[in-house]
Image (cartoon, rainbow, N blue to C red; front, top):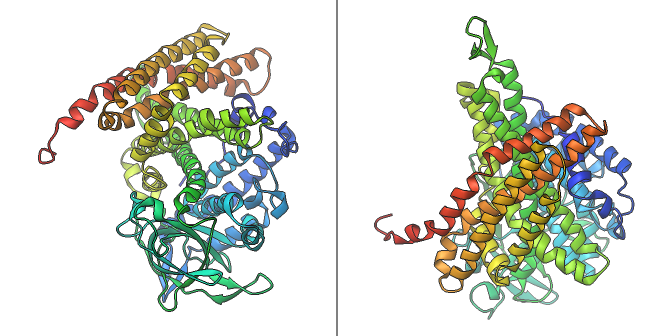
Length: 596
């Protein structure tokens, strides 16, 4: 497997030129996020990712997490790597200093999340879920719960999990049957949860589970679900782990990918019932859990980018090394590296441009999250919430993870037959990527969320404001014909998105099934335009830097050409997506059940 090296130059470019790090660092509490500090963070994180996490990625996949005599053991090297991760303070970066966090922006955390997942996605899932648990408790936990759990979770000394899914309750979380019986200042939890990532492991001495369950007499469906914090070990008067709670891992799943990560079946209440503590109010658990889920959806989107970047790096290295056939225009010459063959170049350029577009959108979403939390004016915070992080989250989650699978598949293709052989590692990226469009809300659910909650709810105004902004910003870009042609293509694609939005709003007002049937191609159209928007701006900024001899000229020239490739080969898909979204709904719904 090719070594991973974090793409720091592109990460830095996106942070400073596209996502607006300079603006984020002016927000209250984020003043320490100076360019020098961020550069130092990126450099140090890249060392951990490249030198510690990446070398145990393939071995972890081969060895797998094991379940032995009721004990979960992670692959060799994982627990030691986790200790280095925690000792370096990496878990604490975006969290509240009151509980030991470093108080840095989510925008700065985004490239680190990408690095951990590119280097070793199975390992990175553990801190990913802990991060979401911290966000949940910070937002909805009581003072006592924060005091008991936050410092340890933020430090990474304890880890957190999300317990939603049950055998009969996957996407339909309202079908949850786990029970919570009140008993004094706590509840007794009984039931089974499945697909619990790092529900049991050998990294830390306590695991803090966030568990959805029903209290007696609760309403049926989603409105009757409550949320509980259920520690593996109950705490003594000093806040230290003491008595083992009545919960256990029953088994771990045998999976297509992310094999180093234990995905657990958890049993609560084999005996007297596991002790759990209510978060917030009864029957509002799903509402609270969405804080954790939305955090996870953004980071899972970054997972998609991460695995795509890893697949691209491996395919690119292989293309320079693999000698096969003669160059088309040099029939008299010897065999050439496959990087010289036009179709291989097309595949690599396709991988590169879409990784960079998705990275820009994900980091931009992270900046919107910071602004929604800390912009000085309430109206501004609300605007960044509705038009920023809310609108972009389903795009980041669904588009980036779909691309992760597609780009990892292309990576296998670049390798040819060697890509189908496990030893090269290309197949692992493909297998690992495949879960990302499924968990934290399938991508079909993300499309329904975009269409229903983010577009139709506002009668299309959120999308129209987005389109107006893209058209205004790209029309104002100055530069060579290469840059202006890219900007022109983005403007044309944005008008297609406007037409699709008008159709969606009109159709959705009278036929929600049609709107639902069009949701996935509409999301793909929206995200493709958003990616073009950022690529056009990137091209203009890179060309300006070239003109001023600012930065690496090879990198800047490649950025301009990558944007042009995106405009020439990806943006034209918008016309077809428009047809799929507006006409495909009728043919989708025309089938009878039997015909399908």
